[in-house]
Image 1 (cartoon, one colour):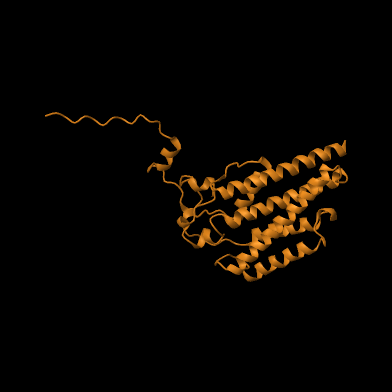
Image 2 (image 1 turned 180 degrees about the vertical axis):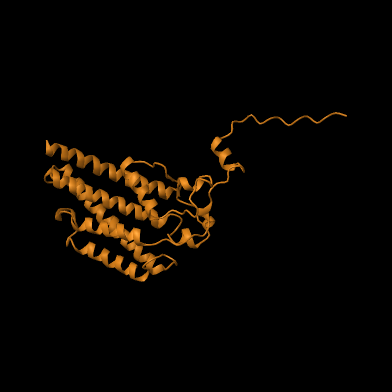
Length: 248
């Protein structure tokens, strides 16, 4: 009786990363995909307050006049959000969502205006003394970092509440954090990305001008990070070059 021919061996090279992820011997962290405790609003609110102060102390030529108008409106929206939802974002509310998006839009548009005014003054040989120029550039750069961190936090997997109160498998992530694919014995139990994680993504993207350990997965995330790194590169490059020439 003849024996069946053995199946040909698969000599295709295996991807070591895929082999690790698909291996049953290495259980990976999936806590972030489950319903977890809701996130407090205070870290994001504190960052917004810092951005409002930075906008208010900018030199008059880099602000939308009256200089107190936009910061005052932003402060009113921030207080309203804290009054309506003071501690935790435990439910989705369309009015609160709209207020958050209006506040974010004001921060980004106002800071973008300030950045354009600064770039124009640098290209035309203006900008004042070196110390004021460095301070203005640092304030605009810091506000830019906070605003984009808020953007990532607001839109990753839909809304902040969706990362904790809905079924995450219905919401593909915009960012791949290292904790998402750590082995269980290395991952923190119950980990889920919070505002601080997104602020870190924004800071590293603004300083390295590219993703570091957190990878963008969707076109929306990639385009937003591209815009942020490009704007940050222009601000840092022009401000430092101009300040060095002034301080010589």
